[in-house]
Length: 575
Ligand code: C2E
Ligand code: CA
Ligand code: CA
Image 1: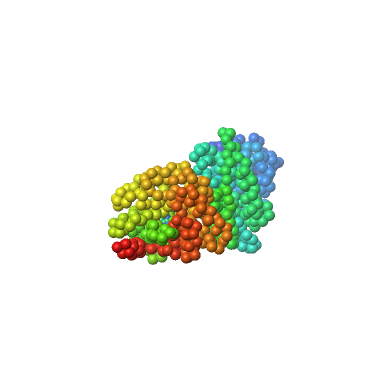
Image 2 (image 1 turned 60 degrees about the horizontal axis):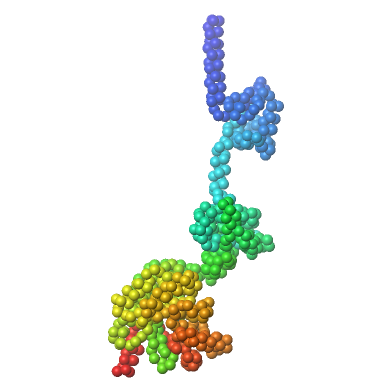
């Protein structure tokens, strides 16, 4: 019996040893470390990968203070409390701590086992290394909020913060301003110095902007060269004006690149404000962006405040751009012609071709509205070609029928004129309809000359060589001085309507117009006065020896048939 009992006990012991070995193996091969505490024996034991975490061991209660010493300060109290959950009769808790020196992030899990009476018997504290996970998490969090290049907020997070500003502003009846900021001519930097330099400039400027942030001013890098600033309750040092002034002051100094180059640049800024412009986050940003474009078109390096009229103009532009996409030339466009007369003798000199557009709903859209838009999006080229072909075709019919010597004036926009092959295609059309270049006059406005003077004057000289006449439209509204025009192959100057309008009422205009006509004639140009509406204007211009007259007084723009009627009458007279 005894022997039997012994072997049974041995067997039991062997099994226990086996279990213990297995447990140790489990602990040792796990990357975690453990503290085991037996309440009964008041005994501490460390197991597992303990050395990975700590360079001391724990054998009694006071060793625990070593543990507290190793964690970063803010984790000390949570750790002290977290280890003793039995005080609250809890059986499980977990929390994170960070070690001071090794910078390890550790997940601590505390488990307490109770007996049937509710007294704690065993405690296991597990330490798990979560440094990598936390770092990945931090990076993800960072990427979710920040722009890597500049360290500013990214667009998404900015929108969220702006939303918070708006909610607060509503409660506190305050304003929120949004400044939408874009580099001027960023392509110049990218093309001239390379994309890497461009990135560096974006980064340097972003880092500068980051220094302007505070709890009421949040700044974001939206994309490439676009930044957005939201200001809560803009006033004093954080008013839009002040911030703009500060930024501009910084931009006066160059940015130093790592390769030693120095770059200066300017920005255009659009501003919208809650609640005036909108109460929605995205709308507010959109409004600021739209008015920013206005700042650009006003000549860059400018700030533009929100204005309902700008928004309306923008919407109209978008609307027209969309309609332009749908336009069917023959169906929606038609040509009108306005007669031009010699002042002396009131003989018909020619006609100016003016386009008319009736959209699919039957509404007329003025060329002064859609031509500038078509110029910007490039549709002016096919439209311009259509205008030329249609007008020349009509003109050729009149000439064949009436043999009356007329000049056909065609408006040509800068974009169209600059396009390579413009002269060739014009000549081709003239050839098709058997019209001589000397019967054609091309009207260009002086704005054409501002950009790229050399190329345009070369192009105009080429055009002139073909025998086509050249007329400078809207003369007097732009920058052109007479001396500036001397080198250009111009035949005719069209004196703008604004002069004609005030001719008889404003003494200054009178003097200017008189001297213009006088000097222009001395330089050998012909003059046409545009927008002549009254008998008095007509008589007065005639006295000044203005060569030709165009305007409602002599005849409005009219469909081809109207001109034909005039020619018909003239033919009858001659006949
Ligand atoms: P523009 O070349 O200066 O044309 C003269 C404008 O003044 C025309 O306006 C004409 O209808 C208007 N006008 C003529 N006489 C009078 C008058 O006595 N009183 C008043 N109040 N207005 C008068 P429209 O036809 O609306 O054209 C506006 C502008 O659109 C033109 O100014 C021209 O710059 C552009 N445009 C018109 N047709 C074409 C075209 O076929 N091609 C291009 N590129 N531009 C065009
Ligand atoms: Ca014109
Ligand atoms: Ca004009």
